[in-house]
Figure 1 (cartoon, rainbow, N blue to C red):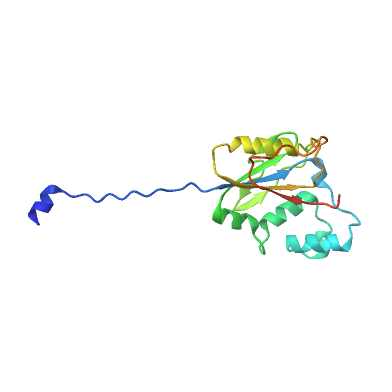
Figure 2 (figure 1 turned 180 degrees about the vertical axis):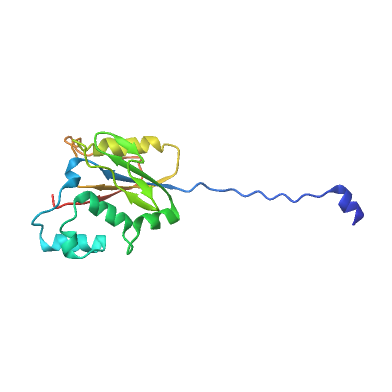
Length: 173
């Protein structure tokens, strides 16, 4: 025993820590996201009410950006919190440019940007995110948009090599 004390044995344990995969949430901040769907069909209003966890009367008054915010933050689905449990969540907004932290958090809830953009550069936004995360684990991109992209006249950009893109289309068209 005395010999062991003099030898000063050391136990070394190595543990490999894998970095968490990233999930990017891209939120369209163009002016069209400020539209309230006046006279929307009852089925659309019911769907919005369910997704945002509000009643149909409240849902019919929400603009598109508020719908996106409610989907991310509502207590029933709590999408943002669910994603944060499993991934490193990065919040971006986009219109003409992609802005990291264009969507920011206060008290764990996503706060949406002002909807002032004149255009929606959806293809460019997805390519920019792919470039920003090159060499990092990127599990997917969730895009909240009304789908009125101004840079897709020639069709969808080449998305080969990109992680899955999950569009959440808000609005009736």
